[in-house]
View: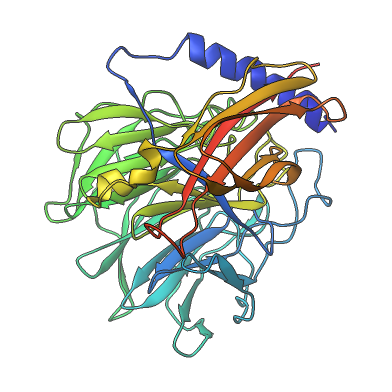
Length: 445
């Protein structure tokens, strides 16, 4: 098995290449805020997540990094459900488990219940056609619903006007990659298989709904190359028609994730090929102008995680940070701040506190980190590795107003990507707001 330091070195080269060769003159960088807010109680890849009453329900996925075959497949899917509360950054691990653990399934919320559809009982194997419905009021799973017309993994499910639409997916029957769309009526427990087929067969895509239309991005459909697709196709359930005229993704991606916010769709991570490096891209697609923007990258590349919108933030969790076989999981919850897009006032502290880029970067053994405080404040400056684990606390005390400089010594650490996070401001006093900023640095020995 490849060492983590070797995989990290590959990532540095790729990041430098992307910075020098970013595609498309119309793509402009825009700054958004990433931060680490919690650790997951159960590591997962290929899981699903759903939001009910401001809480994120995370379930399924594979947690076993040991029992894999020569293709990197295997591992029994995790049936556990954990619930994350963004208000407290705490987890509830007491919820009922699924009847069947699932990986690469899809999930959606209808009338306050979570519908989990299809997937696989083992990583790469035993595709499923069954449905489980979770009721948070009774903490129970219902397995009595009609099965899907056939088993599928890598599918996508969305609710539009009281119906659930299944798009894409994969199974072992020919053709393996699917174009057929199914409409499920959860009230009457009835399937309609007569809908217009998706123009491009694919699985492991991502979909989001804006104005009653389903936007389908990326995925893959070739078991010889396992290459990702840059395809964007839009399905209108009202007319049962597909629109294939919109701009494709800036780059091919599969195992990517997306979430809709007002008229925009935010697209995260994925990979260009099932065996290629996990990517850290964040793209914002404007459905009105048919344009893409490049936003602040994820703190690490992520494949097959999950993203959830709660209030003014998107929470990314789970997934793998290394290429196939996926055996280095993202263990932390990453928060992507969208305050300026949601319409709330921007945190004024971000205009007066300042965290600078470390120098040199990349660095060998040691680097300098600087920041500015507008007033005397309690400050923490910490360094994390690519897994989100704290490796150093450079400062944790009250500091005076002005510029401050600290040296980070990485001589006892392996080459890799690291992150440094500055937090300042006490919510119990003053404005009641807390400043947090994270930046990336590269240790090369």
